[in-house]
Length: 193
Image (tube, rainbow, N blue to C red; front, side, top):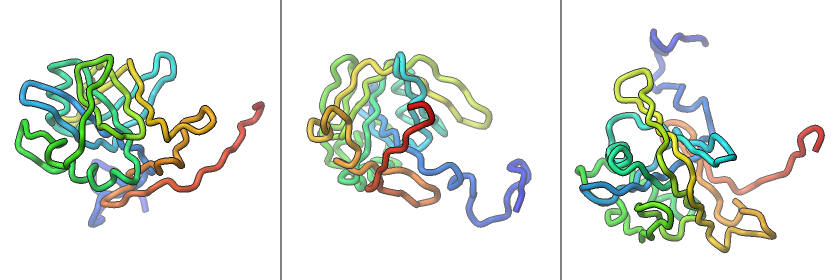
């Protein structure tokens, strides 16, 4: 099968949503005038080491984007298997300004380098200063870039000096309503290592 996205695919569900998988989930927490906000974004990734930087895309003018424009900061919380249901619940379309932490029953902790909440007990949280918000093609598509200014690691996720994903089993977004939990890992050396 071949299709041009501009012409449509003719399938009951958009295959593009399932092609680029698995995708890490950026569970973005923000603070703004109406209060605190927490929402998962599956168009998310780390993009540079030095200085460490991340990005996520927002499809629409959501509370996360509004708060980041207002404050210039956000936190990225890593989703482990134990927080899968809470992450899903935080994606509910709540009224503007309603706190997803309260809605999901999640405890929040304060960040250290920025004025923003983070998910208490998350395997890791990245405190970020927004560096750019870039409008993308299409209606209401935005790319948010941020520099990581602080990193929280849950102590039990450290193993012999390494952040060990097998200690919390990260959740990844596939497509449609599909997710995956990473339970098996392996090492593979690159040429020259």
